[in-house]
Length: 428
Image 1 (cartoon, helix red, strand yellow):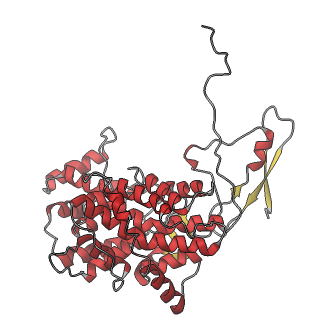
Image 2 (image 1 turned 60 degrees about the vertical axis):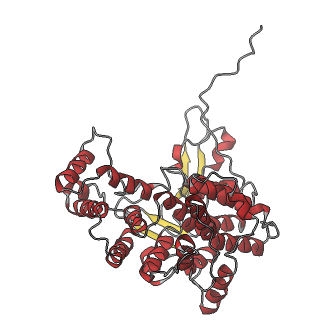
Image 3 (image 1 turned 180 degrees about the vertical axis):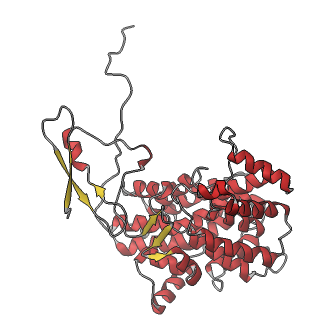
């Protein structure tokens, strides 16, 4: 119930409009503007920068204070004390699992990692040089043709089964997209490996030689999955919710989320970091400083990618954990002398010490460090956004599950029409 009201007066309208104000458990209050429609008025908010499209109990962000909570738990605590599968359970069901719940959930994930054998035929329809994101988008959408036995979205158990299938199969499909891209045979998942270990195994092993999983890399992969698991009502999550509001099946909804994530303004940030390091090229101090000066020049279009964040006006709370992980991976793999990574480390130092960056709070964000880690582990740049999609699947499906657990309406945004008035078709 609203305990306060806002009063809106409009020129030409002979009465004031009362709008309820609601308070959440955290964050700004919201004004319920639904009553405006009956008065022939709509709000105008391009980009939905000041509009709540739904209510949710999954994730909370305070960008000004650098806070990110999943079900109330700070992201840095989850990343350091938990693992990705446990975070998946927490996001999906609302609470950390006990030992029995975790064992059951983890077992269900392990036993759904394989995909239907006929899905292999899907890949033959793609060119070998197809971007892995295009493959992922198509194959995930096609899962509805194979797993339609539990797709009654009105039943909670069906929604949970679909969620488990997606969480389990996404790493398999992602690794298959890579293998197809490079012309190598697919690897079947192994149920004796952890979630992150299994993904690395399917990515890098081949029938010709043994593949040993580096525990430091597996830990880093698990943290990358965890730190990208959910981020509130971002563009791709909102896309999943909008698609879900039509009653579309979960695989179609997640495919829509993948398509939205593929946009360079959303999911391509860590790939952009590597492209920027390639552009800088020379690791000399003078050259790096030249690019830093270009970034400071408001008349120069060059930007330092991986610094600052649209949501976080302070620091990215995920970045500290990712920086620690980055240092661990580089030390383990002996890559401290890699020229590209030297550039990255110098840029990091400059951003943390230069007054220009400090005043503007342009600190290295999670994408800056995750891109470096993925490159160090040998993951090709065109797989970066695919890995983001694997991570974010749990966030997407948790929001989809939440919306179907409550009352919801089909999404129908309004518009400010600026076209022609009504006109007659001209006589010929």
